[in-house]
Amino acid sequence: MSKIPIRKFAYRLIIFSIIMTILGVLFQWIFPLYSSKAIPFIVIFFFIITMFSLFIVLRKSSQVSGKKFIAGYMLSRIVKMLSILIFLILYMTFNKEDRIKFAGAFLVIYFFYSIFEIFALKKEQ
View 1 (cartoon, rainbow, N blue to C red):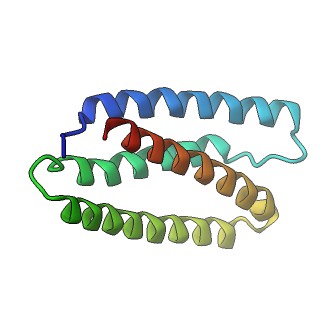
View 2: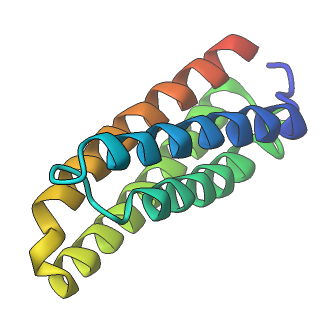
């Protein structure tokens, strides 16, 4: 398995996150009644969590076999999912008036970051 350059992935993630932030702000501007004010913070959260989880997976990807890479990737996904659930539950507990809009925005952004992650890893293999 070839090593996926972390810098290359980080650059792509930064560009993707900037695009997601711009789209989120545009959505807030065009549809203020249907959008959460936390969209930029959701993007920042996903940027940090994606960079951290994939840094853990990619840092030794050239030194491990396919099974160990998959096990490491799945472990990073579990940690990522748990942190996402904790973040989601905490926000929705303390901000009850924005929870439906927040949950919708959160799920859409999660979906896009998951697609980005899959394509970024698949492209390098």
